[in-house]
Figure (cartoon, rainbow, N blue to C red):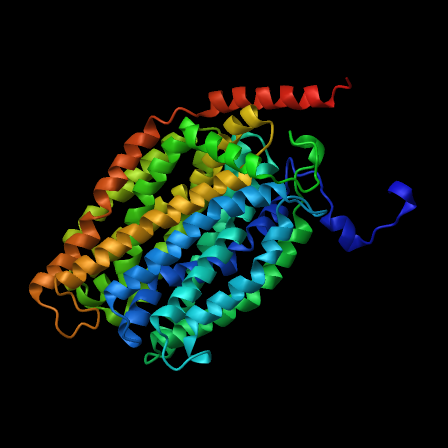
Length: 477
């Protein structure tokens, strides 16, 4: 070591390593933080709307406003977080210290939202809004830095899918856990309330979060400085650099293309998630088994993940993604026809949705890593955090906007989330919204993906230019 300084085992672990071809156990460690993170995110999209509107009396319009304002703050903060994180590294690297820093506030936000009874006797609009904003910003900081960390681990087209695929696989297992726990409670404790389920999930996530983060940051290296076009690891951040990055992102045709795709597919998925419990409760007339039904969705996602990883190996990501999105959207229209007497068909349909959604969950991340290469050629610096932050923003903004539109619409059509005053007309409005609101945008997204211009050939050309840039910087003048 320089100067003869001896570093301990832990210190050596935190230094940059050689990540070009990670072992399977390291990929599992990289994906491990997805377990508690998705165990928090999945219940928020599915359980919190009926929890706060049904149990605590917050109106559908107020809930829509909370979701919208929280996401707007998140969307504004995300690009700033991404650009700042890109330019403020530490001795650990560019990502791991940010992942650790976001953990305490994320745990607090989870407790505020999942167990409000620990903090107040009756959550108000402002209480829930603050909790939602804190959760959105904290989860964004952790999630985008983990995504960017994986995006920087390899420059190879197929290897990026392998890295993000392992993380998505852990996320699928996490969702299975997130709904397996409530499902087990429905079986063993039939009278368990939604609040009881959220409390157990909160404690599970809070225990797993610091443990999984520790394992990941100790086990998985970051790309060595010499292997990145950027040559300095010292903090560097100016207002000029900030706006220069934003300008390049606005004019990047690949980024604009894929963000439009993300908007078209993220919004419909959010509508389905937000209305799933209402659909199961009032259309399928099975209010006590919603968590059990979700097990079929996420079991299918877990079981299909090895197939997706095999299919993606050596093939064009955007074409595979287009097919999976097309099948997902087309099958969603079948929700027009199910009822209490077609439960078996409904289960098959939602399991198919879970399998088809497993592909988009990691291929979008892998494609974004390729798009970063197109910017690196121009800037000489990998702005991975900034690009993943924009993807994170659109993934959250469009769902929030759709929820802000859908819930007031259902309220105007006299849909009652408590189930006490619903009419055949209001239930029909719920059925049509659940079935068709996601379908048309998803089909458009599939068409755009099929014609996406950044494939393996173009990505190979970009990597060759980056290697030439790197070689020129290593050559003494």
